[in-house]
Every structure is written in C-alpha cells, then in structure tokens.
Image (tube, rainbow, N blue to C red):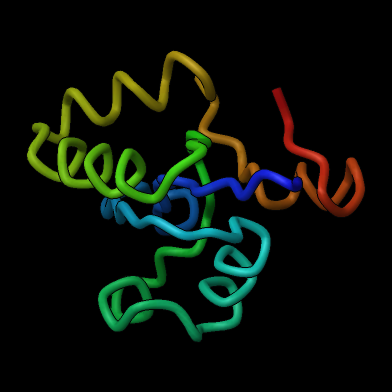
Amino acid sequence: MRHQNYFVYILTNGDRHTVLYIGVTNSLERRASEHSLGRGSAFARQYNAHKLIYFEAYRDPTSAIAREKQLKRWSRAKKEALVARRNPQWHDLFTQMYALGPGVSPR
C-alpha cells in the first residue's frame, strides 16, 4: 500500500520576504506549481507569494492541518526562525526540487 504524504508549507514573495503564506496540501509539487502560475489562493496571488521556502511532510491530513493552524498562530519572528533553521538563505525550494527531478524532495 502506497502512503500518501500531506505537506505544510510556507511561501514568501520574491526577494522582499514581506509576506509569509502558510498552507497545506497533499501534493507539494502541484500546489507550488499552482502558486507560481498565479492559481493559488487569492491571498498568495494578491501578494505574489510563490517562493517555497519551507515545508514539512506528514502521513495523515489531521496532523498536517493541526500543524498549519499552529504555525498560523505563531509570531512572524518565530516563523522566520523556523525557516532559517532549515533554509537559512531562504532559497526557493520549488526550484531545487525540479533541479533534483520530479518526486524528489530536498533534504
């Protein structure tokens, strides 16, 4: 039986990083692509938030949704610290995933 992954992710807007958008999805690749093409949430579209800077994988949707809600309650400083621990330069992880090949997650 194949396990489904669910992802909590954080997007920002280009190099300015003035906006942090937190979402949840069952296909990080598809959702990141939707955001980059302007087909994501209205908020992400309005603020041009399409740069994937952080994600976490979960085996069940309940855990992923709970984590999304938790992160949304955090202060901006706490969210920035979370991103900085795994991605200190705030590189676009979506671009790196495609450089590695489809279905490959950067570690």
